[in-house]
Length: 352
Image 1 (spheres, helix red, strand yellow):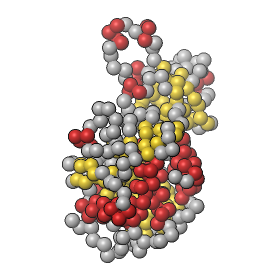
Image 2 (cartoon, rainbow, N blue to C red):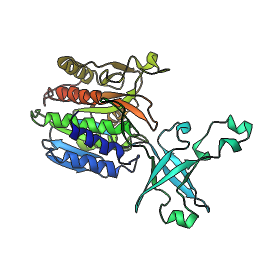
Image 3 (cartoon, rainbow, N blue to C red):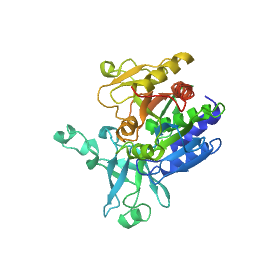
Image 4 (cartoon, rainbow, N blue to C red):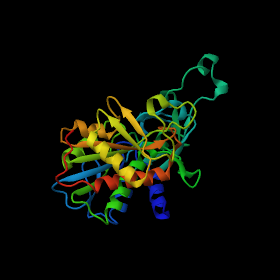
């Protein structure tokens, strides 16, 4: 991957933005989009749009949600300790002892998640599963007033974990779910910039997927595209204990994953698979019998007449501080999507 693209990806991954608080990473995304897109815009839910062509007539959406899981401050006690709740789905066990960044109005505040030391726990308590309600954030404040001079109730929190290059190809970071989807959406649009397809194309960095998928619902009504390709992460199955019987053979660097199932338009799936074959890119298939658990479902449910597809990036250790992905999978996902979109015309028929 080119160095400039790596730097853009690092900025996206490093910028805090849990669901409902995506403004900062969305600005990073729009800044990059403005270097080549015809029109860059955003809406009242915080969705960001980058257009090739005019926002009218037949169009295609390429979408990745830009929010990450995080936390929110709910209370500050008299001693200055901060109590918090979850934004999105967490395994509470990975939260203990982590460093955090609080996005306060006056700037970033660092702290650490505290818990009673194991030496002080009663034997029965040591057997209990830790819950977020048992934990607090310590920012070094002497009392409540000092804490509230730096943060306030309702401020968002993310874990303080920066991207790390494990190898030339494998990266680890928080927020990979799903900054990489927003990244791929823009990279696919960039690939389409030179040879414009006969329909308008809009890349979207959508909001709030981790809590209610309202961003994808809203963009479906606003754009009313012929096709909506959602990009998300999916579970890799190349590590101990992974679920190959449910998620198939999926490995980092093994290619972007295509979902086939009840919530995916069969013509879009076939078109993506054919595009991958033309490019010589392997695309494992995952089956979704009821729903995919992604913004593709929201596009389908919107009633806006969108034919949804889903391209996923293999990811180890999802919803943890250290998710792992392959840069090669990101680049190949963008190539497959761009090739498929280039075949779509105003006359294309996606009725099953």
